[in-house]
Amino acid sequence: MNKGDFFTVYMDGVMMTVCVLGFYNEEYTGEEMVILAVVNQENMVHVPLDDLEILLPRFKYMN
Image (tube, rainbow, N blue to C red; front, side):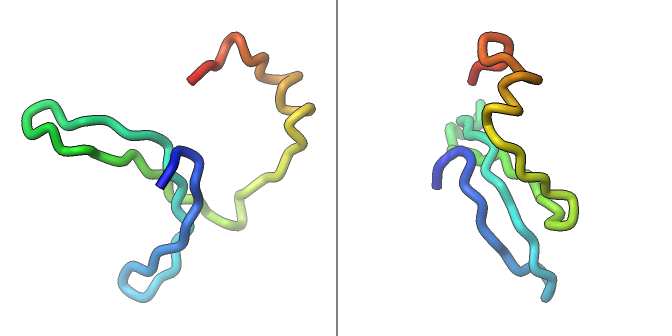
């Protein structure tokens, strides 16, 4: 599992698309945690990277 990966899960019979946003270690237990986002397929937008870089310059939004 890597940052940016998409996968589908079924919860209570409902299909959900999930994206991995990041990871961190829980402060008290040291357990590795995953930050997930549930993605609504109807709201997904596909944008060419060049168009996105015009709106969001890389030097402002670095991971």
